[in-house]
Amino acid sequence: MFQWTKGGRQAAVKYVVVLSDGLVSERMKVKRKARLMSDRHGGITVVSVGLGRSVYHTILESVAFNSSYLLAPDPGKLLDLLQLELQDQNTTDCVKEYNADILVMVETSTTSGKIYKTVMEFLQTFLSKINPNNYDNNITFSLAQYDNKTNYIIRECRLSNLQYIQDAIKELRQSPGEEPDWNSLLRFVDVHTSYTSVKIRKYVMFVTAGHIQKESVAHIKRQLVNLRDNNDVIVVMFGVADHTDWTVLEKVYDRGFYTFSTEDVDVASRVLWNDIKMTNCTII
Image 1 (cartoon, rainbow, N blue to C red):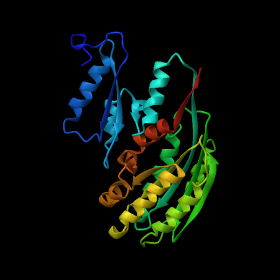
Image 2 (image 1 turned 30 degrees about the vertical axis):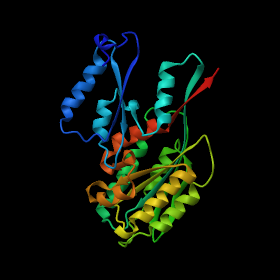
Image 3 (image 1 turned 135 degrees about the horizontal axis):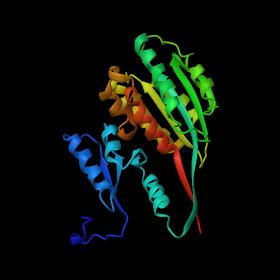
Image 4 (image 1 turned 45 degrees about the vertical axis):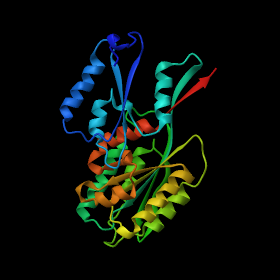
């Protein structure tokens, strides 16, 4: 479509936006085609947007021009990207800002001690990667654990205090092996995120095995939608490696761009860091 023989403008900057779940059969062929488009003279920049319950982020990231071009299904993110790169004549002084409140909810009450160790290692690794170049930022981190009731391990600590946060993670303990009370857990999240702010992006990351009674799935899904709509919360689900009930978890939370496994720590940290990044431009 971009060839001049088909009406393409040679001098124009070219973008392709791919809306996909990344679940493709010929993965290497897709990746090669994407690289050919971006490497040719006057290349095409590929932007990937993840959609669906089960999103294969690794493929979408490899198809995108680079990891910064893997976006959430949010038109504002795409507009920010294009505004910054194309530098409209009516905009100036575009700056990147990192303002976020991250709450991690650990719910592993029905898992083994071995899996619990995996969760701790995941959190340690995620935190070490979430700020790749040690940018000065305004990101606060909270960690809470469900253990019959939900309690803070650490609350609203600046991400710059990384060593302190990583030491606090070691205070996590294995919970009793009983079914979690998701109503109580979500009430806790609602209280934590009920404040209003137009400058801070609010994230809630559930680290869970996804053990939810099937008759409760629809109710919990409604509660998550309310969190998203009323508190302006971005919900992220992390299933605990291969011990997760993915069928239930995906039904509970079907905005699949934000559903990961704890094994996806590298790509998840890059995706969320790029999502946190906000580009503000002054309009003349």
